[in-house]
Length: 37
Image (tube, rainbow, N blue to C red):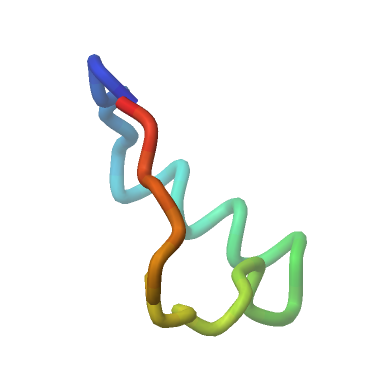
């Protein structure tokens, strides 16, 4: 993201309550893949 968006602690708490589990995949190695900006 070129411009990050801020969230409040309350928003993070509510999101965590609704999801019941982490909402992300494990970080993968970059290897030779290009990273676009």
